[in-house]
Length: 184
Image 1 (cartoon, helix red, strand yellow):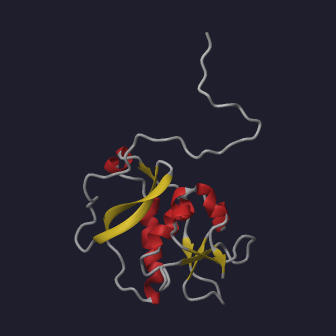
Image 2: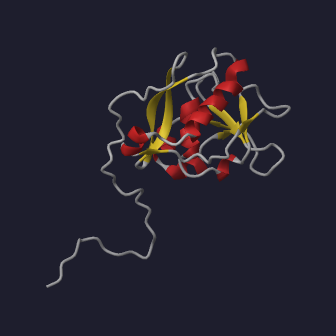
Image 3: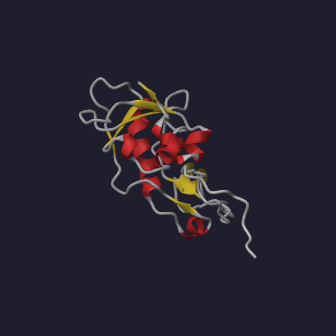
């Protein structure tokens, strides 16, 4: 006797998303380890098939002026590149950001809110763009509307500036990075 699952085969590839996970993506308490002068900062890490917030204690440059944009962005990128600690890892959190990703100064003629990466944005791994944009969105690294303007090296293909918002698609669908953003 044969039994089946009731799902018919198809010749068309179907992307049904990531497999379900039993990992909860929830931490039991704040991840406090920043020491004196640190403040609570929300960063976004990959967990299961989405980008989710984690609170960490981080020493940050003070202020919300445009002069703080680059130091704040660099400090948050440093935090995002750091591998999750044991508690975050056991809850299923990880980072998709490449260890060699850097934020550089904006190029001549770029708008004030622009941040440049040392690699074209479209070459970032799946979910890395969501991690970066969502982490920067509510900080001095973003514009007044909580959008983040990113570009790759200005003299390379793929270096054009794009304005990104931390929306549901960017947090939950890795392929959304391909069409996210509006040209500046």
